[in-house]
Length: 64
Image (cartoon, rainbow, N blue to C red):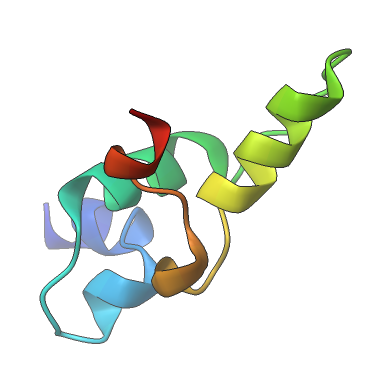
């Protein structure tokens, strides 16, 4: 079980500091996917939401 959690752990989770669960879940969902989007804005949003640095990721509040 621990191995499964570590394999999907985000860089900010591994740092041992508090993290934003929304940003973490989005990163886990999309960071290993190869998306081919036809709408540039969606591609940009996915890139922003999967940045390795959690401070650079778009948050749920940013999208409201």
